[in-house]
Amino acid sequence: MREARTAVAAEAAHLPVLTAFLQEFWSAAELPAEEAVAFELALEEVFMNVVLHGAPSAGATPRVDVSLALADGSLTMIVEDDGPQFDPLTLPPPTLTGSAAERPVGGLGVFLVRKMMDTVSYHRVGARNQLHMIKHLARE
Amino acid sequence: MKVRLETLGQTTVVVPEGRLDFSAAADFQKEIERVLTGMSPAPAAVIIDAGALDYVSSAGLRVFLLAARAAQKGGIAFSVCALKPAVRDVFDLSGFNQVIALYADRQAAVAQVPPPRA
Image 1 (tube, helix red, strand yellow):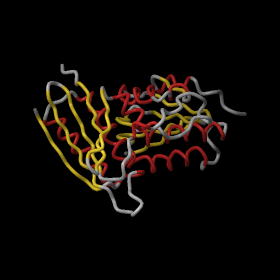
Image 2 (cartoon, helix red, strand yellow; image 1 turned 90 degrees about the horizontal axis):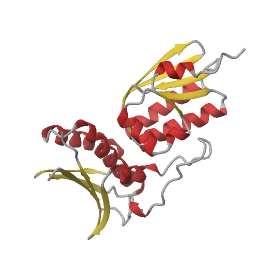
Image 3 (cartoon, helix red, strand yellow; image 1 turned 180 degrees about the horizontal axis):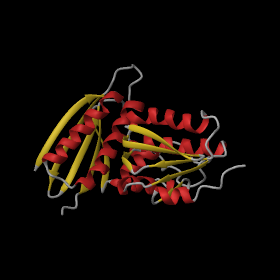
C-alpha cells in the first residue's frame, strides 16, 4: 500500500501542481508510464470542473483535496471539494456523432473519465463532494 | 507547450510539442486561429503534425474541433497526423476520428492535400 495526498485552491493556475503531484507518485511507485495518461486526464477533467463550475455563488474558492492509494495493482484516486453539492456523473452523455459544425464543443471531460477508469463513483460526505476513481494497472 | 509552423507550398504544418492541457489550450487556439484566419494569402491546407504531442485533454480537443470548424468555413483542407497512441485513444473515444481527417504520418497527410488552387 502506497499513499499520497495534496490539496490546492480550485484555481486553474494550480493544475500543473496537481499534474506534478501525480507524476511524482508515478515515478516513486515505478508505475507503467503508458497508464499515467488516464489518471492525468481524469485529474485534469475533474479538477477543472470544480474550478469552472464548482464555486459557490458567494464567490469563495473551493479547496480541492486529491488522494492516491495503490493497493493490489489498483490505483484509487479521490478528488474531493467543499463546493456546493454536485454529482458530475448525472451529466448527460455527450453527442459523439455529427459533423464538426454540428457537434457540441463541450461535455467530453466527464465522459472521458468514465471511459478511462474501471470504476467512478460520487459520494456526498458531509459538506464535501467526493469522486472516487479506480483503475487496475497492468504491470509488466 | 511549444508550437512550430512549417510551410510546404500552400500548406501550413502546425507542430505542437508537449502537453495540450487546459493551461496550454488558450495559446494553442490563438496560434491555430492565426494560421486559419489571419494569414494572407490563406493556406490551402493546414496539417497539424501531432508527432510530438504527449497529452491532450477535453480542453485540447475543443481547440481541434474549433479549428476543424474554422477551416471548413474558410474552405481550407484540415487534417491531423502522427498522433501518439495515448492521444489517439482520446481522439477515438471522443469520436473525433469521424469529424477530423486523421493520418498515420505527415507523408500520408500531405499526399491527401487537394491540388493547389489556380
